[in-house]
Image (cartoon, rainbow, N blue to C red):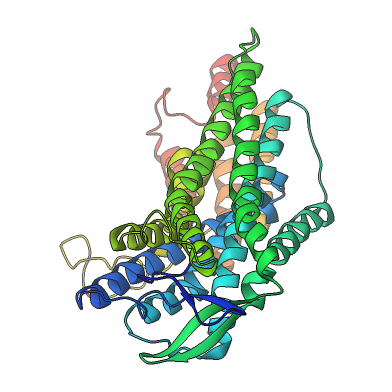
Length: 440
């Protein structure tokens, strides 16, 4: 999948067959491509890493809040594989495009194609299991399914173990080879392993691309049919709408992977078919794949890691809310509070505030005692009841002034009682005047 040579298979002798894994070092290409292709890969790398990390943070925060589910965990694994491709494969691939020979060392040559294929196979297996989980959820969306973290980790472990195991031949036969143009990373197959590799290059695309995606599409078709069944209950209708949106999002992820990964498999099978024919001494019926197809297949494969988080963002309401919430947290925390501008209502010089003094608990007790005394004096109909009450009020005010507390409302209250300026509408104690009128 990583060879872009004009003559991908070169017969060295009767015991060793090899084809190049160095993309731009084994064919003649314009100098503009050495700048254009790495620049495109750089843009995909930066944007893809940012989108995938954001999606992973949102999924992790949802799981931390108790929203742990198998489907969200599989989406997290899909974003994790995309992040690995963008961080550890695209930069080295861009560097190899800009050079005419391999200069990244033996370790990168040994692991580059194996690591890329392992991540892509893990994504393919993840999509297949995700389709099965989606079909089970849609069949009974109201059922509460509890899954433990240990079970999810076991599923993810077997996905990655299977992906890394099935791509071992790509790591086993990769090695550096010195040629006239310099070092070239090639895949050498000995005569003993020729029959195995002949079967492997045919079974590998079927096992990691055709079978998982066909399995996923079958379950998504089944889930879509279940989403079309309508229910008379409002709660079930809401659940069905949510299930339909989830099915659409996961189906879009599957279709994006099937479409964007397909050109790379066409190039992969095309090149290895030519290599096999040439090592057998037969003349292939078709020539090598065109350069435009090879470059487009590589770019589409890497762009898939950018498209996946964008699909999740636009088709999932939960993820949209998470993106917006994360953006607000990142922006609002960094913005300082706005400073007041100087004006007639906002003077530049700071002034010491003069808050209204609060009434202490002791003073509230004295006021309640004073009101009870005023009620008793009015009931006993003593001469000059207002003067007695006013004296008691003055004593209460004197007691309150000992604490240095200013009570303007209380002072106005007693002032109005002494002057007799209270009206019937604003009289706070009408019962005293009613008793007084009754006695008269």
